[in-house]
Amino acid sequence: MTMEIRLFNTLTSRVEALEPLDPPEVRMYACGLTVYNRGHVGNYRTMVTSDVLRRTLRHLGYRVKGVLNITDVDDRIIQQAVAAQSDIQSFTAQWIEALDEDMATLRLERPEHMPRATDHIPEMIDIVERLTANGHTYEADGSVYFRIASFPEYGRLSGLDVAGIKDGARVDTDKYDKENARDFVLWKLKSDEPEWAQWEAPFGKGRPGWHIECSAMSMKYLGETFDLHVGGEDLIFPHHENEIAQSQGATGHPFVRHWMHVKHLLIDDETMSKSKGNFFTIPDILERGHRPDAIRYLLAGSHYRKPLNFGFEGLSQAATALERIHGLVQRLGEVEAEGPEGAATEACAAARKAFDAALADDLNTPEALAAVHGLVGGTNALLAEGQLTRSGAEAVRSTIEAMDSVFGVLVPTAVEDRLSPEEQALFDERQEARRQRDFARADEARARLVDLGVVLEDTPRGTRWRRKS
Image 1 (cartoon, helix red, strand yellow):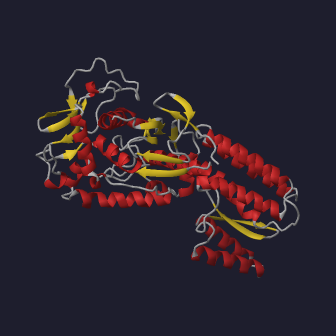
Image 2 (image 1 turned 30 degrees about the horizontal axis):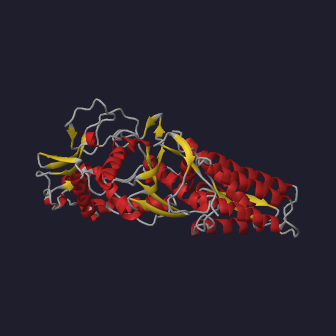
Image 3 (image 1 turned 120 degrees about the horizontal axis):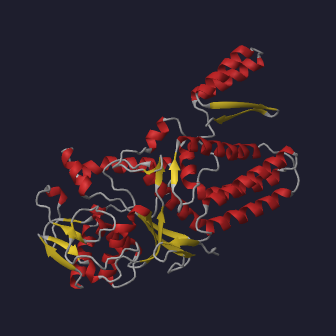
């Protein structure tokens, strides 16, 4: 059984129920990266949000058929490949590999399909031909353009007033000024570009415009009408507006039923972007000593419709919050008292109800995490009072694991549960030194572990360790 989820729909400007065409399956498309460089943490805010939404849908009983595209041909890619004396495949391979690495670091699930634009040129050509047959295109200087005056609904998604547009004003660049509606290019004649950036088509040798790539890939895998399209708010216009126009212009059917957009990630109150140079990649952040699970926790823990001002203090706070959760999960395994679940049953039920309700209410991840921390606090209190039994501890762990199916960082991983060989040797050395009452050597080993980021805690049940933030 599924639980209804309500999300803000950019198309209607209100929070409304997500109603899949073929329940319980949700067909979902997310705009991925343009692979001319490594993605930055601002890009990954949107991708983490999409991943949390995907996991939430499954948590609430839905099946998900997802697509995350890779844009591997556009103006910037070609320009930089030429500068590097490379071709598209060789140039983009390094950045696709970097994308795979970053997705693994951030524990992003791979969707059912991750298509590359260059593998779907025939589908793009087919859309251009259908648009031409339906009277939506014209040719100029060898390129094919979409005439937005032929599509009366243009501007509905972005709220843009196109009444005063000059008929025939056009643009052939992939990116252009906001609120400057012009006929956009579907197929580019670029005689000054290398052969490896051109494909044969009935309307002339050239290459696709950026916008048509997503229409081709999404409709190939999800159908001409599908349930949910996710992306950053910077893509509302012109990219998503153009997707709607060309897709519906070609098929005559509604394109996407529900549009979800993620607010910008800011740094020093400015939008993070490669063009401004004020960005951090995932390796940049890791090199500063921050934990990958803390990055995901920070990105996932803020509401997607509110800007997130990125900072390293926030990452440290995220690591501290995770340590609190991880510390409880580790202590649960030490509970030995027998007996019924007792108060833990009620605590788990209340936390799970609050958690699910928060996620179903416009993906309210801050409230969902508040439910997690409420359960952690309540369980710590039961532990302190000696009121937690082994069966109660198992119920709490099971509940946290269910919550972790959404967030992906609440339960320590096997890697986090292990010390490195060097760390383990120091840990063993300290234990032996304490046994021999050589406290100076024990303190030295402890200090070296702290330098390596490992904090020890001596308890009546033995010595525990944790990673410091």
